[in-house]
Length: 293
Image 1 (tube, rainbow, N blue to C red):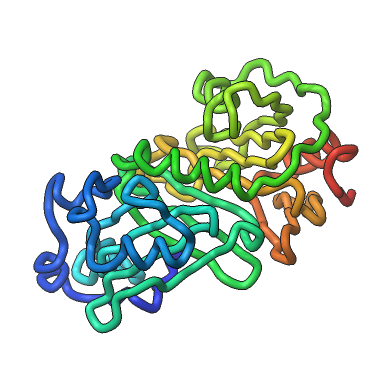
Image 2 (tube, rainbow, N blue to C red):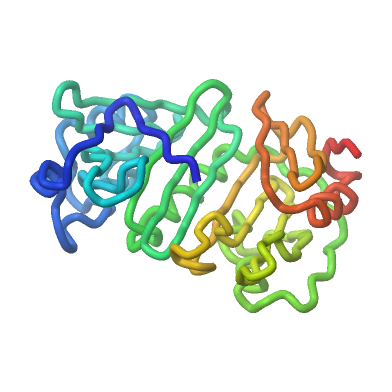
């Protein structure tokens, strides 16, 4: 996977990273319970930026380090403490950069094109894509349960009005993990959401572990759930990648060889689902999405 260096991140040696990164449970992300648990002026700044009402609308990620982009363990990418704030005005990220702490990214609901997550064992990454900007944050997956309700509220805010649905597509023979995901919060905005889904195997090397993906259409979103095939040898299939796209903003969906291409808000999302599954998605949803053969 492509690991982009943010302007507030820096590559340092292992010793410098150890000085700034808290170990054990103190270094885990969290939902703060008191104003005193929020770094710097993040609470006030995020309230002003997007209307975060209080600590219940925040997600704190302490300073962390991950392997450098060139591999090996001697160089680390150091990320300062960060705070995500969610409110009626969208989502924003406050960064505790030593030189200039403050709000660095603000995305309004009407700007958001897709909300993407990657999960591999204890590694997680959230990316929120907008027309001309993005919010990207790495965090320990032990805190995913804390973050999930905030992301669900953002998805509901972004999703817009309900549209029509096709008849459900049979998916007999799917592994239990995928049958469960199709009715979970990963695919649905509400417990009573009706879904239509196209699922199947992903292309993997002949010697690789089997991998699956499901493309889910609800009345308000197109959601792609996929095994992390980019993590072969580093966690296997113990995780899931998600792409949540507001239906009302989709301009075109088409199969392009091994890719499912989704054009949304002027951006071209390229999802490597393989030629067979991509073609099935376009065929199944042709009457309910702006598709191109």
